[in-house]
Amino acid sequence: MTALLSVAKVSWRAGTTPILQDVSFGANPGELIALMGRNGAGKSTLMNIIAGLQSASGGAVLLEGRAVDHWSPAEKARKVCHLPQAVRADLPFSAWQLVLMGRYPHADRWFESETDRAAVETAMRRTGCDTFRDRRVSTLSGGERQRVLLAACLAQEPRLLLLDEPSTFLDVDQQLHCFSLLREEAQRGATCIAVTHDLNLALTFCTRLIVLAEHTVALDCTSAEALASPEWLSLFSSRLHLNDDGAGRRWVSFA
Amino acid sequence: MSAPPHSHAWLVGSAVAFAAGALFFPLAGPAPLDYGAVLARREPEWSILLQLRVSRTLLGLFAGGALALAGSLFQAMLREALATPYTLGVSTGASLGAVIVIAVGGHTFLGVPAIWAGALAGAAAVLFLVVGSAARHGRMSAFGLLLTGIATNSVCSAAILLIHGFAGMAQSFSIARWLLGSVDAIGYGALVPFGVLVALITAWVLRQARHWNLLAVGEDWAAARGARVSRLMLGGYVAGSMLAASTVALTGPIGFVGLIVPHLARSHVGADHRVLIPCSFLMGGVLLAGCDALGRCILAPAEVPAGAIMALVGGPYLVWLVRQRG
Image (cartoon, rainbow over all chains, first blue to last red; front, side, top):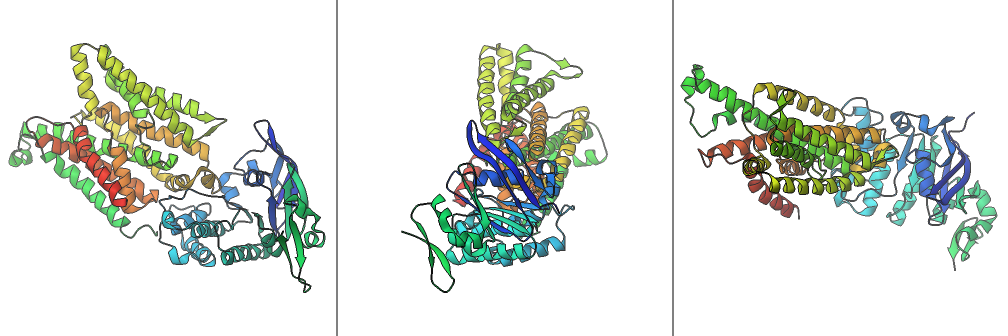
């Protein structure tokens, strides 16, 4: 069986500065992958390359075995969604209109069908933004806006969700809720790759961790393996420790 | 559709206003028409109405619609509330072409008035220049378009000033008059092709309405939701430029309608381009034809150019609109 996504020896240079070199990994349905790394490690670039928003300088990204740049944009948009790190804050659209844009790849008609509206309703309810559905995005707080963007991705009903820092601006409860939603998506057969800096969120919710360092994949293992041998924490900072409360609960703390 | 609740009322309202404008604006003018004579199709009333007033009103409606539509389009593509055919250099390029022709004193070129040919050539030159320098590796960036457009705009404005300064007395007067921008009676031979061109481009722009929604959020946002961004940006830029250039060729530079109407429409009907685009077109047409009708009446028998009325009324209105929104 071909993997849903396979990233093969992807490289990218900013001018002459190498950012990514020979990045390779595959992803399958049911996985919720945390993509991590320090600032400037190339996480967002890698997400853009996988989404086909940016071309790699070398290597290939295959989606269901076919190179990502051989997919037509509309065809690809029905399989893959991309949550950007940020959109302009002063958008003139209402929250509902923005989420509805997730349905554009599915709707052939000029206006959306009942199915599309239902998908939008569900996505907005799941992310808890149905209470401000008619407000303009420009009047929303950062966290509320982030939930609207997440709803737009869910409404797109993709097989592969690429989420660039989905939990930024979110309060703690909403961060937990956001990652629970991603886990639900993975459990119903989607593949999620989420960029995050929160090691505890990653270890709690994700099935797998990929850490970028020195331009390439420095760590690629399941969360269980990561908890078993925590030496990789030094990739982020020398001040991190993995704690154990004796009852099997583990968390990363800093000193 | 969950656009603001009043959006459909606005759409219907502007369509009604557009139709009413087409019917009633021709009746406004310096010389009162004897309606009995018009109904009996007696000359000269019938010809005044049909050849002068109706053609002029239709030109105003379509020109205003085309400029407002071009403004909405550029503002969506560039995500910049100040983007208009003017800030992008297209209109000024067209003006430069027309001004050169006036200064040289050409009359006709391949059967069309030389001023039109000059305006279209000027706009085409700017189009190639701006697209050529803003496109890098097959990708057009909004920021590149805007900056190149603004630079081109200044160069063309300076060239117009120079030509104006060195032109002879008579030419200099014609240039000044043309630069004011006005809607004048034109023959149906020019009006029909203009109307068909505007209608075709409007239909294309309207078909892409959902893509303009996506682009108004961001280029990557649009690309990740199925839009072919480079092709769309190029198509939108060419469409907006053609609308602006063909309008400038017939009316001279009339600036404000492309800025005011999209703002007005967006604040009332919201940003969904499926409603915003037809609304902008209809409201832009009514506004320009209305300004022209007003200009024919307020200082009759003298005529105030529609461009001047638009600027005098539109400027303060825009400031007020911005203040209201705080």
